[in-house]
Image (cartoon, rainbow, N blue to C red):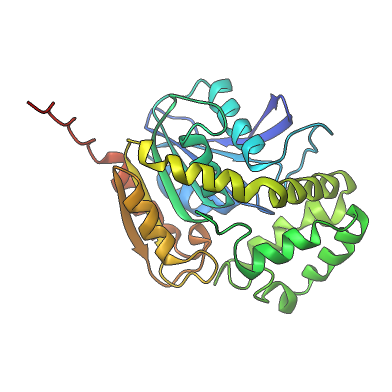
Amino acid sequence: MIELALLAGTIAVEDTGGPGPTVVLVHGLLMDGSLWDDVVADLAADHRCVVPTLPLGAHRHAVRPDADLSLAGVARLVTELLDHLDLHDVTLVGNDTGGALVQVVATGGARPTDRVGRIGLVSCEAFDNFPPGLTGRTVVLAGKLPAAAFGLFMQQMRLRPLRRLPLAFGWLTRRGDATTRRWLEPLLTRRDVRRDAVRALRALGATGRASLLAAAERLPDVDRPALVAWATDDRVMPLEHGRRLADALPQGRLVEVPDSYTLVPLDQPALLAGHLRAFVASPEPAPSAPSA
């Protein structure tokens, strides 16, 4: 684990190093980089895995009070991280809100970058699905509370029966309750992290859908290999959106992941790692010959 001083503040990053292809893995709202632990354990033998913990409510370092925590602002932070580590030909993969961030980065909505060679979208917000489902709407609504009241609301999530409700993590993961419980600790115990979480929720609620719709319009311009991996049992991110994303991306390819909810890295890490390994290793299509 390393710490990077970026414009928004200090960001914790897991970097496995190594000479293999670089895969950058992006988590979602109220999560940290441990979302990807089991996937990284599989891929790290022959890939360099870079996993940031972004300031989305489960982070350990509070960011600057003026940091832009909107979807576009956090996407710029991802791009800044790629620059800071001087990464090239990256496979940029996101799950949940992380997939929305990947769309914004790939379409240039954050800041144009040529560091991304391939993208992976894993059961994520797309098109007008923002905030997504009952889970997303509930947490964004709770983010309108003052930070102290938001903390009191989230204290209820210490109880497993409440965490497993559809309005919490119940429709996000079948098997990852222990991990989701750990994600709540910074928010429940640190006032500065709660303030960041509320700022992020308000910014995402205000502009997230517009940013995502703008990215959707530009998806046909993302002419690079794209893997869309979608949970067949997802109740928050419609499978139809996975199909639409794969169709909209010129080199898009859809794979369906069985027996999983939205957080595929928790529910089916081995299957997802296998799909990512095959995707990274697949040759890029030859450029089309110019028409006569």
